[in-house]
Image (cartoon, rainbow, N blue to C red; front, top):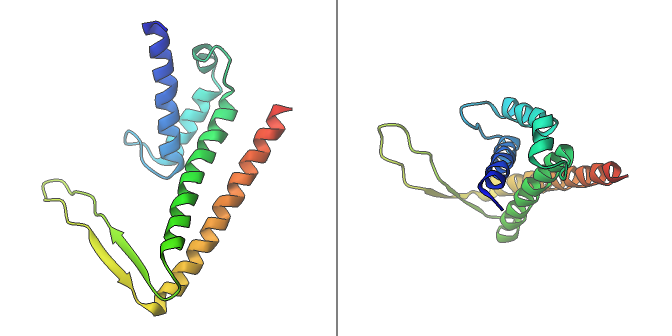
Length: 147
């Protein structure tokens, strides 16, 4: 692989990373998630993208699989949270972002009282099922696109 191939791959990889981050709700390069996703999707449908990938990777397929990957990571996190908690206790560690010109706050451990833990666990279960349903839908779209 020559330097030109490395550059082409790096461009596509950066777009994929930006798309995945935006899909999960993160700002990328100062752009709102929806704007970054739209920009990346436009790129994935472009002739330039097709040229960079030699037409080997369909942009729609790539976008769906990036979503699936990120949702699977989220599902594992939810399953881990549900696995280490029971209906009477819920522990969480919160890490705060560093504010400009200030010292970064230390993470805080918090144990939710039993009166709130059940509701939190129920919400996590619902969100996990929603994530799994979205993964199934994206996988179904991939199968339809392969036809």
